Picture (cartoon, one colour):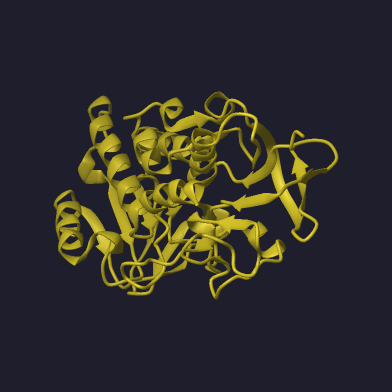
Length: 336
């Protein structure tokens, strides 16, 4: 008697979704699994390479992977997860267009990732841009060059000063790498302008913690700060952005200045859809999983990546939301 294939629903097309699906397809004979991947986009983005895409060091097409091309044999549904009835093993998915569809499953893998954590700072929602998607990276590249064009074309010193001031809030990987790549782009582009020099620009990094890049350790963080300051980047540590209304940046250390460009990279939070699934979540709204990446009190449900509180068996804490951890978790999840 032939048994039907086990139905695996994977929600999310990032590191967790892609590498879990690849791991399952590698380890299980064809025909034994029916894998469905649900993601808002039909491609996976290597987010650590977004700064290089923004600066032009890499083409945008080089930082994405088409899911359908890589996951041959799996069903890829472009849409958003609306709800899950886990006892009934049924999910409700909202496609880009048309009516919602129901998908039945036996096992579900949740890799919804994270979104930018936006704080109630006046003017932030109206003026800031994030740094988590390819369109945002391309926008920031064009924005820097556009502001340089504006400064080249005006004699108003206030307009020039505002146009050539670039503020990054958040001293993690995204903020530091993004600022460094774009500053390098602007420095190189100065040779094509008559009136714009690197000395005319102001690059500002604002970080609420006493240091930057907490993932790499204190010694390397100090070295990174020294290198950034050697490039005339203005670093404000233990400082918060208190207002961005009207393009006027007000910092908690008393500094105030105007800027046309504000980039927000101050942390992430679990994707909002996680709260609608009915699974246990921790204090930060992330799914609670055990050391095997099983969702607590939910047989047949698995989770990893930025949307899950994955135990760090080395430190005893929770794994940080980095690409390196997500990749290892996805491969382990597939094996488990």
